[in-house]
Image 1 (spheres, rainbow over the protein chains, first blue to last red):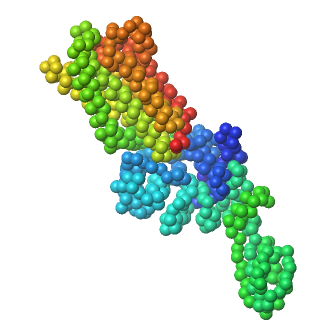
Image 2: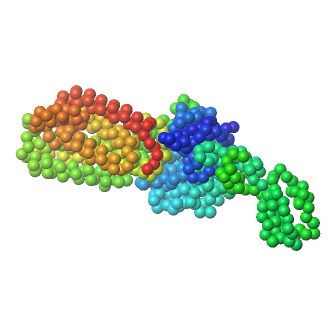
Image 3: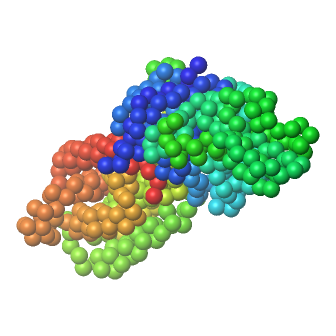
Length: 298
Length: 269
């Protein structure tokens, strides 16, 4: 079931078209990755979903309700982790979470507040003000705030930007748990390896427009090739349209996913006793991303 | 789940009360800044103008200058601090990006405005009370009696209307401001002169006809004189006129605050 549905979204800032006819859906129990370089329009999309910005054209619905006409109902089921760190000058961690809980109508929510603080390792910092927290702790607090009301839709705008490896893994684990619990997650990140690991589907956005979208594995298969590296016992002079690199007796081939490896090897026609080693590397989302950004539509 | 079904749940009062609680707790955390400094300022005004210089100033018939000054200072403290509370709280939220929490939460424009207004009003009334008690202290030593408001209902009513109007003005200014300078400029160049020229320190009887006309277009004159009527039973403008103009001022500021929240930027600085 589509929790978030965006149709033909356009967002203009004066003469600049930041988002250009973007459409996608995020389903319950799915992690959808929005990938793109800086200024691609990812944060503008998130800002329009949260009504921080008004869409110029197009519709955004959460649980089939238009976010501009049913602000309260749609916001009540949405959690947001913004890209920039939020600072609260006067209050400590526990107070901030209590306020956040109250903003979503949850007055007696101490159990959840305590459980989230423990889960995100904020417990020992609960009496500290934000300015006394490290960057990673601030990020954990922002995640705790977004999860306070058990949202059906979670918007994570580069949640792992600038955090250490340990926290990054912990965030990944949280995302996987939330996905299992049926939360629909919209995830933006610059780390393509992370997107490949976490996202069921991705959209690659460039200059405000979605260039490609689909299931992550499928997109990688469509837009990239496997790399077959063969090391021979004896150096041979070899020429083949799929050969992309040759160093001494090591040859690297690009093999499309549509071609079976066995069939390709038989095409190469190497003597079996001349093959010393053979490695296959799968295509990556990073390669697919580069391909889309460099060449646009296929 | 639709907006209609949510109304039966906890999304009306709890978010509003939580934001109100945040506003009150914010100024309580910085009491020195929010209560003590305004109280000391008023104490000094009362000492210099009310007691020292005030002996030689004639205002309304049968009223000492100290009596005249106390309600004006109470209202000045109440309005100024109500304005400061909502404007500085919102500016802090914009600067620290906390404004995103408010915008992303299921809080309506009316909930935000009323929670921030009542938080600001509470601070205004606390400061107003402290100023009134300081005034009572001086009055007792000067007149050997307590200053008892003649119409306590009007006294409280005008403090509430004035304080609320100024919290809404603070919301408008903070939402439309692009920098801290904008807020300081509006506070320093517009609001403070209007407060001073609104009859805190002088009666219209002491002014030339030109300045009397000028003062009559200053809405603050009506807020201040309403409070003065509540305390002394006399004022420069009829209490009914003061009440209607003050209520009109409150309505205009409220509508402008709604417009500012709908049209203003929630983007952090």
